[in-house]
Length: 157
Image (spheres, one colour):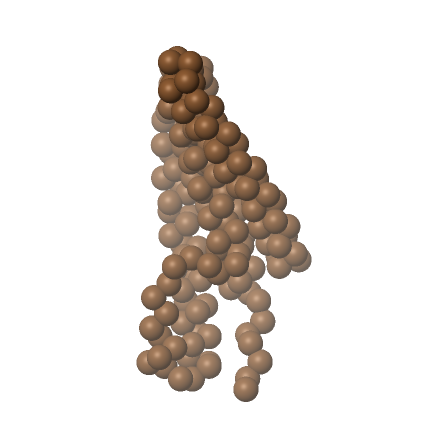
């Protein structure tokens, strides 16, 4: 069940991140066009693209965790040959990542809560809305890493 939920959340995250990146490209193109062609700048020219960028980056990280496509050094397989030992370290790494995500998500929640009553001047949106991207993405990513932690060990060769 956790595996299925992880697949669904990753798919939704990928779609949302892709839409957000497309929106970001449109927003920035419009701002550049406005500045250099019409010689006016929209009042939201900095805040809205930043908000979209932050959310797309954190939500996109969920899919990167699911697909295990984050940059990794990967030196352990060259040093350790035993599949059991490698599997142990993979599980240990998942535990450390989950703990780190929980701590990071909690800190992001605290920051979002602290800034929730402040508004972004151009958008009239709560500043906490920007910071909520972190705990939201961390919570989803924890589910993805829990699914990876509890997936069956690879078959022995």
